[in-house]
Length: 189
Length: 263
Image (cartoon, rainbow over all chains, first blue to last red; front, side, top):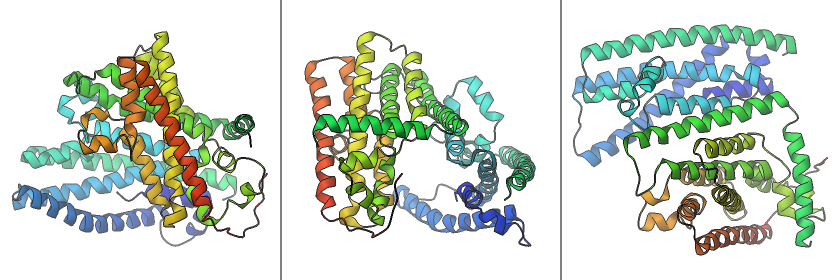
């Protein structure tokens, strides 16, 4: 994932934001577009390498063309929502100056509650319930789990949850960005 | 410079660096508490793992408490004491060693101890929390954990010095140097007994994560003086090697011809 949160932090700390704000394009929009562009490039390079390597090791493609298309579409949707959450981490620089400490916590929560290292099914029930109230499973584990059994209901459920989390994160991002800009104005930019 | 004077100089420098690092109380508290949270979330994975699988090659969750307390504690002490270490390669490459070289103090100690990172306290607090949560409060266990944190600190620092000194020979490879140091931290937080053969040799030599995590845990599980001596000897050995490599590389150093003021 492109580390857009550190770009935001750099723009804030270096004062570059003051030069970018008067431009006739949205600052957040430009950060998102930049991140999405890098993401696409990463996907083409890393995705091709990863796919070819796995194909070489396994000897066959374990996905039907439809499932492959679903995996790509959901992957993009999750990546865009993930990008917005990373921008939320970046916006915390308005208050914290440095985002890496907050970023670590975000990444670790993603690993643990997203089921990246251990599958969520072996977690204690209370932790599974807790995880289901967060965006992490739909961003990682739950979405990847669809590869093993692509039930239409599950796919729709992931699309709905991801879209909802997208709306929530975007609204929060816009709200916090506006609040942050007010602090920036008080500080003199 | 006599060793005793070096030690006195180091502690005086440390006092100043720590004071400077905690000047901004709010940032310090946020960074330290975020680090504790980050470490505890990571440790949750082990807790979940050991609920399902009760041991890894004989190691139980208690051993993981010990290993993590030592790993986090040692890394935290390194960040507090030698905070400038992670910028060492950049300083060498920019030719910014000059202001340190002109002073009558140990160059390497002066350089790496000239900054203290506040986040290190988060790692140290995590170690204390893990000792309490893991019920590792028997006097001998605590004594051995503190000793192991010290030896781990020596190994982390030594590998940091060696890795960053590589730029004397290899040029602009500072990212690679940092990746090398990060990989040591990562491997030291996993039980080294899951590796075998050649990989285990690597875990005690090139990436000595086994000396930071595995050896102390084995020493605490079944204490013998021989294990303790190996632990102390190997960590001091790595530090001596690090000093030797840094000063060997220093002969190739080229000044950046900058006018730098150090206050």
